[in-house]
Length: 493
Image (cartoon, rainbow, N blue to C red; front, side, top):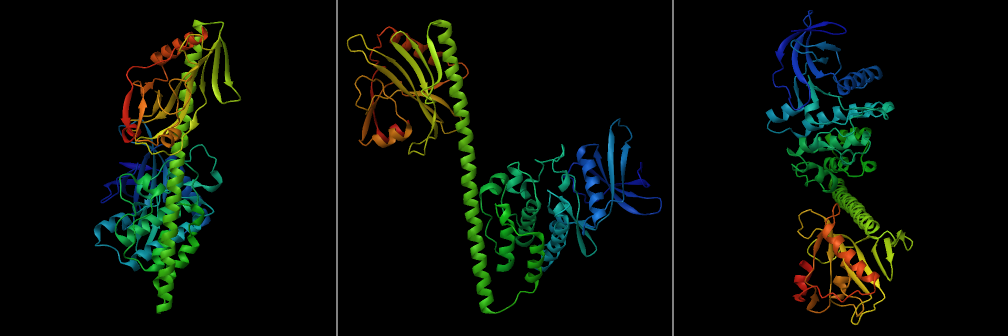
């Protein structure tokens, strides 16, 4: 098979021995009629394949050092296929850094520094041209004594930051920077983070984070403590792995510090200061990880509360729709009482309403609660022994602690000294703070899930209460046998 490309014709000599097959391209050994040996990367014709050729051309024009240049490129139709493929021809390297790591019994510190200096030189030249976004050992190739960076398929050209195809979410999980996992724009600091992962791997012989949950670790966990590096090199690698991009060193700073790491000055004072600096760097790195983890938890909590709001609004609209169908003369106000109520419907002497959800604070219960609200049917009691209001709590929670959140209807018969309100409502915070005795009384209908898509049973119960309230005949609801439970059991339900 031959490839007729832009500059030359290339003859296929078979699969490249030892080629990394983790990427999206097929890699073949090729040769020109003049005897020039090369490596062909064969892609399906996609924006990614075109981008790699474009980025390489741009970088060659501005003289970026230590990159694998492109000898030729072009479109082809392979035998037996109607699809158009894109081929890039590159010079053949001796081996990839990934293969070198696999074949060697660990790199020495000086060998690691040599590799890292070459890659840092490339990153410095790239700063004003492109962000590579996929720094890893498989994309670093050895040519003689030099190490060069290749595979710019998901790179972002600086001046094309608003392009349609920027491959924003593409990444190699063990080397991905926190900001790319969050879907934020990549910068030179993004490459520095991936460089830091690779540096850690070269020096320690393992990745800074174990898998398979790499994303979780990158976002909010400090890397494992380094054992093999000098304090100067340890501090540099950990700074590259800072969660906050602005606190990572620049490629130029990395180059200079790698030079000093080769010829570290001796002396007890200097060594002691270097150790102190490394310890402070480790502490700062851990602090950033803790802050990042808290931010991640806050993002998750905020997203859950938004889902709680949307689900309760859907429940409210379902109730309103059924009220309008069954009682057209009822008067319904949405966003009532300046936003404290999602809605209030009034008919005769009664009303029915659901309060706006409130985000819950951490509480000592044994399952997570995201938000709470109340549903209340109110009337002017006209019957002996009747009550003014029937109030239940609504909690958006996960009682099974298995990640399944939903709204639940809770009816309490404890605490609050309001004889004309029965049952009673508690927020999680008030529930845990007011239960100061060893036991409490609860109604038998302690916890029932509300289907926010079709809340049929829930709607039937509460529209019945609304009907009774509208005629002034809201009875005291005993809800079956009252159950005495210990406080510990109450908190775990």
